[in-house]
Image 1 (cartoon, rainbow, N blue to C red):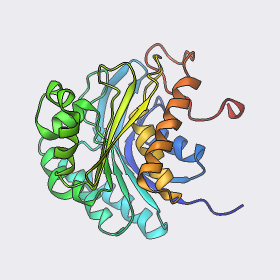
Image 2: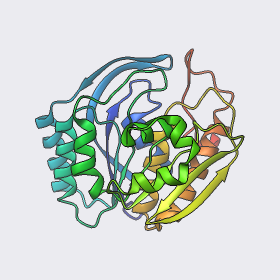
Image 3: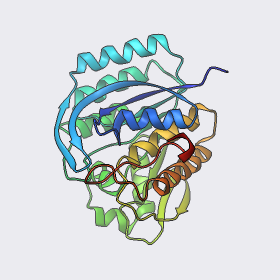
Image 4: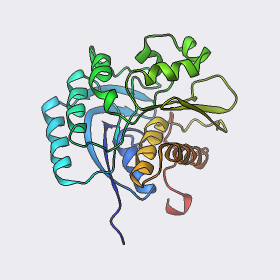
Length: 268
């Protein structure tokens, strides 16, 4: 059996296993990629919502990243929850040790339940240090609004302009996710160095959608690690998420928003 490509997943820990580094690891495993993980925060949460977020100290995060980079030949990086500017600076320092390795940044600003993750000063470090090192930024509407300091209504009124403005912040490409938009279909916009693509898919009605953003971004990283070009990686990741939503449509895990299905039914 050949050695799988490896991805460095940097994110928070969700004990309900629907999002964060657990979702990242499951996604990578489902796609035949090995995930090594660095934890940015511990949370207390379940399917009903987030109760507590405890960021990992910057020194500990830095040591995690250094140990992994010293040992693995990573083919891609996925970055999720970052709560403090010091954490973002640590991640930027780590990426500088991985020149030419594509990094996917999912700017997790808040939970659907309303819990907010960004601490004071984080946005500024994202813009000045981290985004210029990333191959693709994958915000939803509220996250795009937070990065651009606009309202979600402004983003939804001009998504193409928002993509261009987001890309001007430093990342090579932007995937503006359409899950929060009011259209009947799920429409994502991919701005790949100025080339705008509309990626349209079925909007799947289910309560089990916890961790879709984490899953999408880690799937993109996994596909990039396998050698796909960016557009192909995004398209395949979007299909993977749609299949996961369909697969978990009727699940009843917990009393709130359950996870999507990361593995085909034959493996469950």
